[in-house]
Length: 88
Image 1 (cartoon, rainbow, N blue to C red):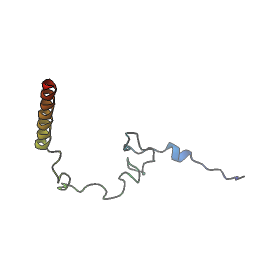
Image 2 (image 1 turned 180 degrees about the vertical axis):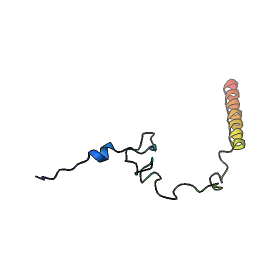
Image 3 (image 1 turned 60 degrees about the horizontal axis):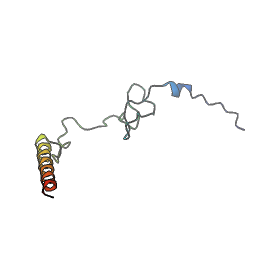
Image 4 (image 1 turned 30 degrees about the horizontal axis):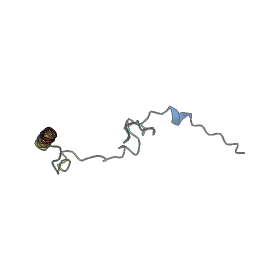
């Protein structure tokens, strides 16, 4: 057998990353010393979007006007479905 003793207490006691995973759970990786995120979630220098990022909403899908238009179309379709059910 292996007689080595691994001391994992310092790593287990270290602060955890504050990021959320895609499924909503917390990231369980240890945070980089002096930071609140792990190496995969933004502790690298210069990571993240640049200041005043103009490419963030390039497509305009989530502008207020586009969302209001989609709400109106959805309401119109709902009204049309109700009218078709009543005519049957």
